[in-house]
Image (cartoon, rainbow, N blue to C red; front, side, top):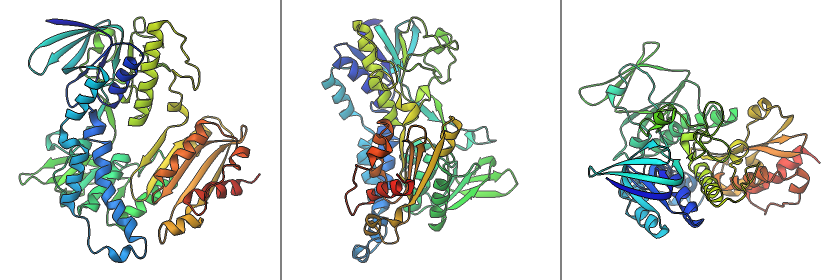
Length: 479
């Protein structure tokens, strides 16, 4: 058995694990990552990159059809095979050679296999070739194993081998009939993508679409999907599922109605990949989410760091914000604070400090690449009220700006800003409409920077752009 010592050992070589290790190495420490699948993780092969590649072709086609002159040049629909080939290229054809090369250039050691915490600062790796390696960390072990699809307890569901988000992202073709259980981001994006590719889609969304967003978001997306032929059935639940002998799937609803589909996608949420990584050896619950403090150190039920503070968790496993960009943000903070603690340097763990992931609580940006696009950051009106803030909500019709009219014929959209009336700063911002994703970072800066509304009047939007909505929102709010 080989024993190797590093300053930092990271379990999981997705974007989060890679970034933790990279920050540690840049800070002068040594680092190793352990990965049982592909280096690059979920985002690279089964989520962000391939799914957005699937969605982009349809969005581009709709955009062309919405502009006279370009519309007349469009003579057909999507070439599904070409869309899938492009998707494959963005998933690197499910090969991680490029990611492995990056690790080598960054000076990060890679151990392929299943990593399990055996004791304090000790990770055992069961290699793909049957070898066993014990890695010892001088300063920190970081859990960055991500999350997997959650399968609900529905009769026959597991036996029916439904699609999860991974299967949908890597599908070799579009099924004729696709049923989707769920109404969240994955469900909405995959309904959009497979409708673009020619599937007949039925959504079983018990709690409606995008229920955590502002109410008008789900309403607009549901209306758009229905206009495109998707059967959106809210308040509906599956009672049982059966995979038939011909490969089709039968879904019996709780009311007794039966639906048939060629494939079933289950997209109701995520579960942490912590089932067999040695948490029991630390008195933590295998398969559970890992609670962390502001610097990503794992804490127990009493809120105190596990052991003497050597264990960290970044990304999905800590459930703070299940988004790749937020996981990488946490990773940068975690990597830097591990370096600081290792060198005996000051730790900046206060709000907006270098070693604190404050944005997880106050300014999480997210884009849903549906039709229409949804871009949001910070708190919804309901969340702000629940947090005890005295707020004012300001809405504006995105179609009423000159930039929107130029962007697309019949442009429809809506913008909302949520203002903390006591501080006169924006704490939440939501946009719905074609191509709104690229407007989001301005709102993120306003929220993170706590820019006073009086100062925002001096941020003049270029004319004629859709960003003119900022001026219109301020005018609606008044000075």
